[in-house]
Amino acid sequence: MARILIVEDELVAAQSIQDFLESSEHTILGVAETGSEAIQSAAELHPDLILMDIYLKDEVDGIAAAEQIYQQLGIPIIYLSANTEDAILQRAIATEPFGYLVKPFNQTELLTSIGIALQRHRLEKQLEQAE
Image 1 (cartoon, rainbow, N blue to C red):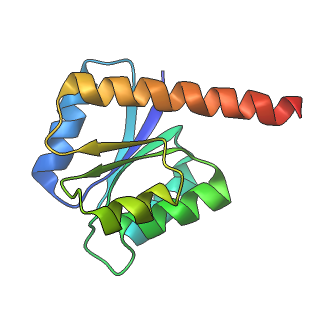
Image 2 (tube, rainbow, N blue to C red):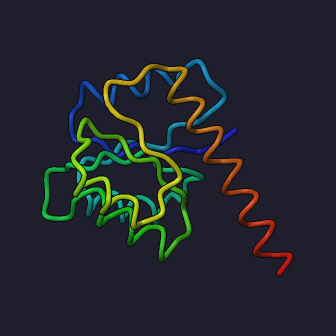
């Protein structure tokens, strides 16, 4: 159904997400561990959707990477974070994400968020083309 890039610097969390998606129709294109790697992988792989952790290992955090990816490539982003601090949420919201999942989340929450994000992205593209 969708080709997904996972951006997560915690290997256990990345594996958990892969496990959640294993039984779905989605294809995992890879796992990036840093914001810089996410930007490069997105440009090379052109996924349909990116699952983006906010806190990453390098100087480019998930929000900065997501903003650059969406502006340059138009790939929808769902944020994954254990953080619910208002300042982080406001910064994330400003990038117009297609979802925000608070860790820990379950398979149903993940798959539902992916489905909604993909549908919203399709509708926005159709509207854009119609205009």
